[in-house]
Image (spheres, rainbow, N blue to C red):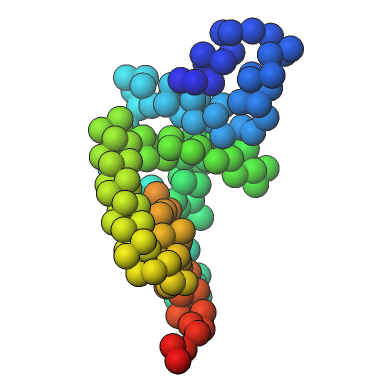
Length: 165
């Protein structure tokens, strides 16, 4: 929506428009929301989010693993010409919108905010130690990019904490 607002406020000499249009995330997110608003389109009801976990299953174990999973489903469904060129755009919050609609964006945004606040309180109460910092900085995206949680846990386990004297 902001992208369309920025387009309507001026031409190429507008520095705000230049900043907004530098990355294609805003354009693709706006495009996706417009496409999903059409009556013949449907929401994915969690297929995008839950299929993101497929990346952890090697093809040697699951030979029939689909090539389009996670937000790549959106790329293949809405931008097949880019998919054919192996271009994978970012849809921003559009992938949450594609899964659950506007209520999903609001719900997951609020849930993410509560988790961030909870992790921040742990960080403050702990005397700002390094594990709490990991919880705060890396734990922020558990819901939005939850398939990375395995990497976060492994990174947390690999970090050596200083021993208390």
